[in-house]
Amino acid sequence: MDILYSALVFLHIIGLAGIIAGFLMQLMTDDPRSTKVLLHSSLLQLVTGLLLVGVAEMADLGDLDHIKIGVKLVVALAVVVVGVLNLRRPAKNLAIIAGVLAIVNIGVAVFWG
Image (tube, rainbow, N blue to C red):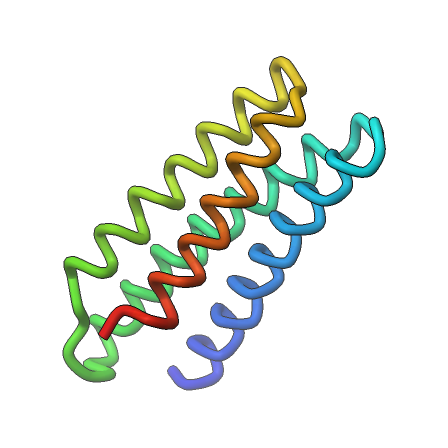
């Protein structure tokens, strides 16, 4: 179970890096691929986050803060929604919102209890 959990954490961090990369790509260039990078990375992070919680619950890896998980889930869903909107109509403002929300999610993960 530890290998699975570590692999999910690895993919979760790759998803975060992709969100930040898509955000920066869209700010610095007008590359149409940046919107797809942002969306796919946000979906990867959402799915791996849900799987991480499921694995942690099944393996009884300790007490989970469900309020923190709920806040992170809402922020992750907001990033996905912004990613979908950005794919339909690319705008630098949407990329900025997605990047800021991803950074907020990092802050919640690191600094919340």
